[in-house]
Image (cartoon, rainbow, N blue to C red):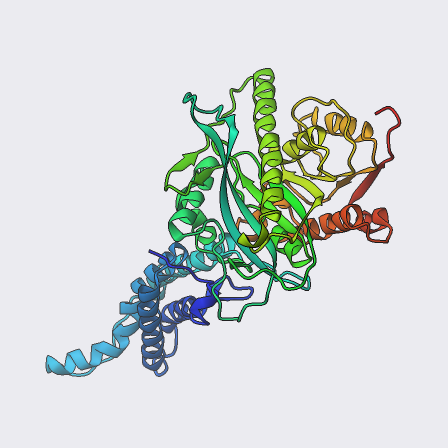
Length: 503
């Protein structure tokens, strides 16, 4: 089983080489496997030394990878090198074997080039498949937060005793959510292990990764990189010193997503002094691992009928919106908890933004409609499910992908209706070269297929989402001076909706 290739606490041996998506042993395995294939085509005098050197490096790299755990991407590399190895060493082993058999020395007989060439090509194809697969499905490397704070993270579980769980038939079942917090923290030594990406433990991360893969119909092993990735945050790190209070940013993931799906974004916000609270919605998120060890998998599914699906989406959005309001209440309680919690007295629950991706964006809009404690909204490419009334009274930033003929024709009119009726100034930024998953961490670890993650590149998409939303939050929650439209406009086509007087 692979134990990870980019873990800070493992040191340089398993750390991914920037730009290659390979660790040093993996890179040496690829290089030596190619050299084994090439040795067959060298002049006779150079062939034995090259074969021995390449074989030794290949064997050593394979042994190291065997001890650390071999990624599935390296299996074709090892297979190609193993096939090439005996042929490369034949020129070295043949003369001693002849002497042992007391046969006269004669030149080693090799297969004619026209027979050897297809075999060499096949081996090179196998070997090349490894780096290509590692590039397509890498271990995500999260951007270093640019703010003045280090980042800490912790996971909490809260149960709303006043709200029954509508996804089960048990009348005593109460709605429970799992929430991950990212917050400004004190700096930790460079050797301090960083928090896992998809879960608190390797088992939880594997469960979530498998659920995410199953949700999109892909084999589980393709998400191995995400399952074993490390982030930039430190679990349970001490809260940053001083008495500064941190504005609160609630986050709801997409349907079938996970609370961690926008970790790069959350860490960037926390590095700039915000408390980000991302919610796992049981029965809607891909897989939610509860404190008692139970795993709650997604139970929401499309019916295939547009009207039915719209009603279902509206119902699910309402549940999510209620979850966001409940989490805000618990954060208020936490802030008032006196000395019993490190974050007590450090949260500015008077400055709150509701945010979300896809259905989570719809939930953020609905939460803002029903909860006056929410001061701003960010919708990351989310269709506004649910009622369009009452009108919004908070500034909204809606980031949308390029609209295409395949885009739901109801999307833009519904979003425009919500923004135009807002009694506060709202903004819609249509970002070129993006797709639906461009607004998540997906570009960091999925293949750069334009229809999936757009064409901005692995790091440009997370940077864009962080830069635009941070500018909006600074302007709306912190009232930072500056021209917000001028800041947003370079990132795409900006439409500004002035405050409505009809609300």
